[in-house]
Length: 66
View (cartoon, rainbow, N blue to C red):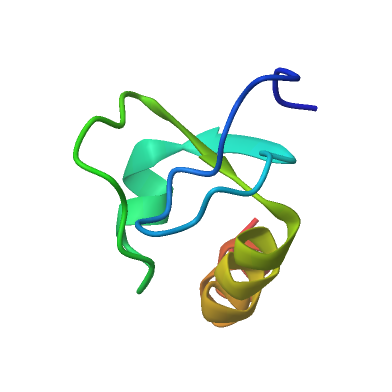
């Protein structure tokens, strides 16, 4: 989904980016991001899975509120 040359924005990770998410949402997780990230944060497959695990409860509560 993310650009072909995009790299994961997690500190110390040099894998290719698979997903692009809102920076504000990712900042709430326990992932440490590089300093130069903008509005969109690129995550590799491994870190995207970690992000999903960390935000699972929040996402479930958000869908229940609808």
